[in-house]
Length: 185
Image 1 (tube, rainbow, N blue to C red):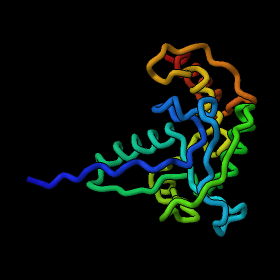
Image 2 (cartoon, rainbow, N blue to C red):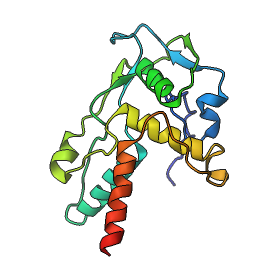
Image 3 (spheres, one colour):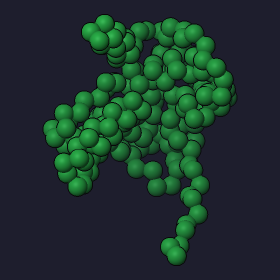
Image 4 (cartoon, one colour):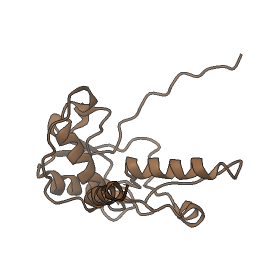
C-alpha cells in the first residue's frame, strides 16, 4: 500500500484580494496585511509573483482537456507572464476597493524567492489560449466585485452586485457575448 504523507501546513499567502474560499481573508475583516520582507532585490523590495484569474485558469484547463483527445500528454505553465510586487498588489487593491488597506512589514519567510513568474507562451502558441483578465487591476476588480456580492462567501445567498471603483471590461465583454449568442439561437 502506498505511503501517505501528511498534508503540509499552509503558509500565509501574499494574496490581498478577497479569497472566495475564505471570506475572512477579506481586507475588510483583517486588521492589516502582512508584507513578508521588504529587502528583496526587486524594484520596491517586496516579492514579485505572477497572478492569474480563476476564470483564465479554468479556460486553459478546458482547452487542454479538449486537446487531450488528440494527444496523450500536455504540460503547460499558466500565468500572465508579468509579475507584480506585493506593494503593487496592495496599491491596486486599495484603488479598486476604495479601502485604505493597512499593512505591516514583517520578516521574510524562509525559502521565499524574490521573483516567481510563469511563461504561458507555449499554451498561447499551441492552443491559442489568451487570458481574459490579463491585468492585475482586472483580476482584483473581479475578485472584489464577487466578494461584494457574496460577503459571506458561498454560504450566503447572492446579493445585487455593487459597482466597483471602475468597470471591468472583461466581465462586460463576456455579458455582451453571451447576449449575442442567446439572440442567435
